[in-house]
Structures are given as C-alpha cells and as structure tokens.
Image 1: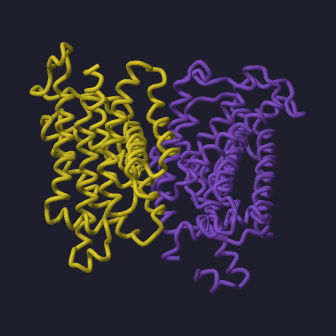
Image 2 (image 1 turned 90 degrees about the horizontal axis):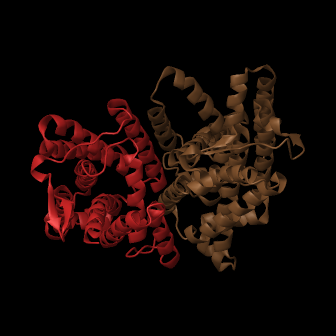
Image 3 (image 1 turned 180 degrees about the horizontal axis):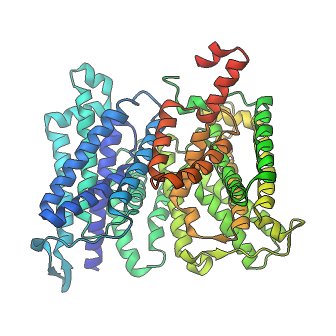
Length: 282
Length: 336
C-alpha cells in the first residue's frame, strides 16, 4: 500500500513539474505550448547523451541549459512576434515546433528505446514499511519539490517574481508601472522549458527514453491542466497528485484499464466543474 | 492581412457560391482524367487521399462553423473504421450496421459535445488531444473487442449497398465511391450553411451570448455541430475500413488527428472545399517528398508554421485573391 502510494507520489510530482511549466507560460503569455512534451523529450535525450559520457549531474545541467536556450528562442521568435494574433495561431505554431523537434530526435538518436541507470550515489534501495523502494525514486520527489518549491518562492518573495505575477495579471498596467515585460517573456518561457527538460532527464532512469515519450507526457500534462484548471498552480498540484495515485493504484489493481482512468477522471471533472478544480472561468 | 486571425479567416458569407462548384468541377475533371490514364499507384493514392480528405473536411467544418480547432478527430474516424470492422466480424447485416455505426458516432459525440461545448479556444484544443488519446488507449487496451495492436481484418460480403464487395477494395472503384460521397458532403455543408440552423451556428460562433439572449438553446446547437463534424469523420473512417480491409490502433493515434488538422489548415477554411484541396496536396507532397527526404515530420512542421503565420487563408485564401484579381476587385480583396 505505502509503496503504491509512494510510486504515485513519484509520478505525480513529475507531472506537477511539467504542468507547472505550462501554467507559468500560460499565465504570462496566455498560450499553451504544445511543444512542452517535445521539450521534455529533448531534455531527456540531451541529458542522456551527456550523462553516459560525463556523469549524471552534468547531464542535468546541460539539459537545463539547452532547454533554457530553446525556451528563450521560442519566446523571442514565436510568442513575442505572434502576441497580437489569435492565441490559436500560436498554439498551431508550437504544434509545428513539436513536429520538428520529434523529427530532430528521431534523426539524432533513432527510434529505439534507451535506458539509463541512476547515478551510483542514488542507486540501491531503502526499506520502507518492510518493502524495498529504490532511492532514486525518492530523489525524483525531492528534485521535483525543490524545483516547484523554488519557483513558488521565487514568484512570491522576489522582486522579479512580483513582476512576473504583475505582468501575468495585467501586462499593460505592469508595463506602465515600469516593469520591463519584454524581459520577462524570455525569462518565464526559458524557465518553463528548462522545467520540462530537467523533468525529462530526471525521469529518464525511472521511465525509459523513446520517441513517443514527449507526446505521451504532453497529453498527461494537459489532463493535469484541464482537471486542475488552466493557469492555476494549486489546481495543477492537486490534480497531479490525484493522477499520480490513480495511476499507481490502477496499475496494481486494474492493470488492463488503468491507462483509461486519468481520462475518465478528466471527463468527470469536466461534467461537474468545467473550469477545473481551481480554475477561473475559462 | 497582418492582424488577420484564424477566426477571421473562416468568415465568409455562407451562400452557395458558383466558384466553389467550378473548383469542384475542375477537381473532378482532373481526377477523372487521372482515373482513366493514371497508373495503379497514383490511383490508389488518389483513393486514399479522397477518403482522408473527408476527414480533413470534418476538421475544417468544425473550424469554419464553430471556430474550434480539433486535435482529436482521429477518434470519430477510428470509431467509424472499427465499427465497420466489428459489423462485418459479427455478421450484422452491413447495410443496417454501417448506418448504426454512424448514428452511434453522432450520439456519442453529441453527448461529448454537451460537455466540451463549454470550452473554447485553447482549452478545447487541449481537451480534444486528450480525448483522442483516450480513444487510442481504449482501442489499444480493449483487446477482447479490438484485438489491440494486432488490429482487425475487414472481410467484405459478396455484395454491399448494391455493389459487388470487391469494388470497395479496388482503387478506381473506391475512388469513385469516395469522390461521390465527398461531393455530396461538400454540397450538404454548403446547404447547411445557407440554412437557418447554419446561420444560427455562425451566430453562435460570432457571439454566443447574444444568440442565447435571443432565446436559442446554443448548447444543443454547438453539440450538434460538433457531432455532425464527428460523424463526417466517421464516414471517412467507414470508407477507410472498407478500402484497406484492415484497421489498427494507428488510425486513432494523435499523429493521425494532427495530419488531418494540417490538411485542413493547409487548404484553408475560406471555402468549404479548402480541406479537401489540402488533403490532396498533402498526400501527393508526402509521396513525392518521401523519395527525396526522410524528414517528412519536420517538413510538415515547417509547412504548418509557414501557413498559419504567413498565409492564414491557406489555399482558399490564394484562390480568393486570384478570383478578386480576375474579376477586378483586387483592391478590396487584397486589403481585407
């Protein structure tokens, strides 16, 4: 039981890191990045390639740096240029970016599966309630908590975090008060992309690497966002945690149809509360 | 053009335009010539393209009528295809069974439409992607009914709707059948847009609250438009199953929905026939490019970005500009 709940926590915290990247970008730019899953995949593959040569930690650092660059480029080239167009135009462009990145990953790394071992320091198991549990999975929870917690602290207590919140609330008023909203865009989108990339490499020893991992996680993080409410960190947290548990217990007790539960949960939430658990009116 | 949004590009008075019929006639003539003179491979490609263009038509119909972008239309397509396969497998009389499949698709997506109709724009698009994936997972996992990844073989009876069963699986036979159904659907959509209900649907797209204030039940209308679009996708799925004789979960995958969406956007939605033209170009481009490069996905991504950013009207937009030039209304047409 406890082991199942812990596995759910591991998966849920990964989903939360991904969804919070989406929420952060949505807050400021009012668009949803359909390439977010491809960023996750790209981070995993880049991190993997560095990790097998230079070690796991450099892998994480390089993946984060690479994805920050991709995110900043995305904001400067796409989001800013299309800011006054219909948000759906931007969504379709990010969908195009996703296709290009998928092709890139297939070209560079091929279509096979890759697996990577956790670093020596984090391998092995601990006994929890009499059952073995891999240490690495606890590290995933810790890393996610540090990332998400760090972001919340940044948004709430720092000067630039205040600016991001102000610009998310009302870009025009924030700009009139002297906030350089132009700088915030690349910052926020770069951070969102880095979250996806780091989540990818951190998850790599837990899940495996393959070219369809990006689309799968994208769909799951959308389900998290729809259940939690688009643009709400709190909602994303609650729904990611619920989905993690649903997934973990579903796989054990009803393995045949476990993969359907997140969608059924989503349907249920939509019928009862179309704007999501903590969402404002869509 | 600069600040023309997707929503704007779908706006055009919904009347039966002679120019649309002319395009249709040219298209029909071209393909008729190809039917007679073309090679078997070209014909087979053409039959496939025509079937899938019905799917693209359904995506374009939703975009045009409701301003909703669906990333999940492979779902009703797949249900139509799997439904057909199951009808034959269980020995249900096909002439009844296929209609039942389409009615079921309509009913199911009407119910879904009642729920998702509350969402607009980005939220709707995200939801359709998730919805599509739901059907993909469901079809992959429910092995008892769908045989999972192995797929189902469709064995056609000796005769179906008065035609020999073989006809449905020959390129020229299927091409003609699909083209006739496609033409009928295009005309039906034109008629729908000219009808009272069609105008009401456009009204809901433009300002739902106002239509609601006038006393109409917009929720049901939106769900009906969504379900109609899904049913057109279902028709495409039925034809696909009949022609290929085989269905597998791939046809419900998100990438299939994505392709249909790209066809619709490539064609544009200034006119009903846009997605159809988009689908034909898509198929022949893919055939041609697969000889030249392996990077079809990237090419698709670049095309999608270029068309949405620089050329929101797609091929219909180009046709519109050309028509305006020819009829001397260039200044008005270009400055929209």
